[in-house]
Amino acid sequence: MKSFIKLFSVAIAAAFFSAPAMAQENTELNYKPFPHMFIGVQGGVQTTLTNYDNSKLITPTASLSVGGWFTPVVGARLHVNGMWNEGGYRYYDNTGSKVDLGKYDYKYITTDLDLMVNLVTLFGKKDYYPVNLYLIGGIGLNTAWDNDEALAMNSAMPLAWDGTRFSHNARIGAQVDVNLCKNVSLNLEVAANSLSDRYNSKINSKDDWQLTAQLGLAFKFGYKKPAPAPVVVEPEPEPIYETVIDTTWYDDITYKDVKKEGDIDKRIFYAICESDINADEPQIKEVAEFLKEVENGEVVITAYADKGTGNPRLNMQYSKDRALKTKKALIANGVDEKMIKTTEWKGDTVQPYENDNDKNRVCIITGHGVYVQKEKVVTRKFKTSERKVRVN
Image (cartoon, rainbow, N blue to C red; front, side, top):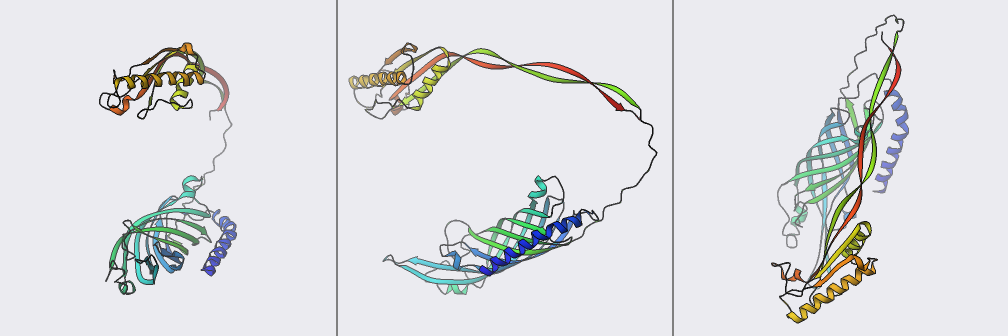
């Protein structure tokens, strides 16, 4: 595994050092980079995620692909990948001890139709770059067989499949591609493949995932030569200029103050037999902030109790406590007592929420005031300028 990582690093470094020379070659524009076809070969490693130690389940994998780039941004390929998977099985017995049954091998092959999007040309300003980043997504069919080692553990793995198992394969991945020359590029691709449950002879009520990392080469062909531009040489006429007056219209924007009326309605709900309120309660803060920003602001505090619990005498006291403590909390937040027009408590004689008993343990704060809002005024204006224009 360490030697494989070293190979990746050396190959990518060599590709980046060769990129400037290759870029010089393509500035000659002796062919059209798009569209073109390609054949790709890749080799690397894969692992299927499971409840086993995945570092012990890494196996080699290889791929072959045929495709084409139809525009600088969009391409497609038919991609075939396969070799063999490894799975592992462990469980805990009745005593809580871990039982490790070891690993098991099975073979697979996956065929996918992939869509490829070049993010570099998508967001860049040119159609050609020496280094590209592809986003890859596709769907296909996975076929697995030779699951004899898992079947041998059948007493512990009753879900081990026999014969040949078919599964969908949904893929998402990314590829870094570095052009080595006109017809060959080096690439590094990582992908995540979603397979049907029980692919690894176990069920976890969701798709199994296979991760792959591969280094490869793409051989490109089918380029077209651009048509030569016709060369026409005409005598340069004596220039003639005229003065043109341009009129430019624009919006002159100013702002004026407009007074508008505003209202606020905040409701604080209580648990049974509770009346305390914190001065930092969000509703209290919002009411205090509203009164600071408006002119001629005033609020009305009305507290209630629910008829479904307690009795009329206690409920009247609870609603009174709730109203007075709400008033105290507003004053603690800087509200002038003169702005509190009315403080009322109605016990359970009035039920603002007739269809929800618990919501009637509530204190309702309603307020009104006038605030100033900036209103944009747009005036249409114009300006003129002169310029010389050649007319021949």
